[in-house]
Length: 259
Image (cartoon, rainbow, N blue to C red):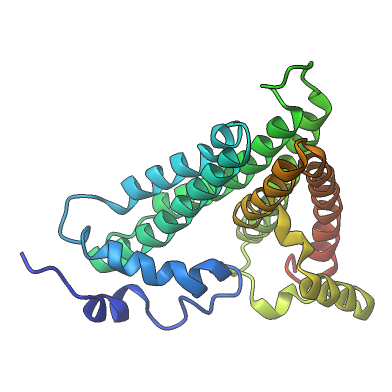
């Protein structure tokens, strides 16, 4: 059976606009993962593997980031990054296989969103448990596990706030929200939103960015011989999650997305 080349796959699985989606494409996908996924697609398009099966596998990879981060030392952080990168790869591949095989389904879209929720939450819960030092010689400090859980809850709530806009509009009989409607009606709120977008601090609670930050913190802590920066990072991400959850909710209510 003919195995399509990357050149044959690209126009079908990467139609115009896929890499330019404002909220649907991660920077890592645009930067490198979409090119890697094309090479993986070649070996899957003629198999019986379905897009939904790949989405299930993607979700498992994302969730496994949490136990990976419990491995002591820097290798746990490395393993966490590997699991999140595998999640990202499969997140690209499942949609590309769906386009090639024309196997589209609402369940696939739903499962993809569930996987995104779980991956972000798993990384932050894993960070909190890592900071609690369950394998240390002293007692486990559950404060850090609690802060990691707070960060995870915030990451999930932010995604839910966005998705619930679509639910509210559907129940009200309104069409899907347009990009222009996401702009706040208040000039002050619009300025605050542009400032936040420029700083991009809110992205630190997303699974991909958080896993990379955890690796950096683990490297510093490995040199120090303690968990000071891992714990500091846990507290900072919990604070960002709480603040961003509130700001995102205000931003939605101040825009035209619910009108």
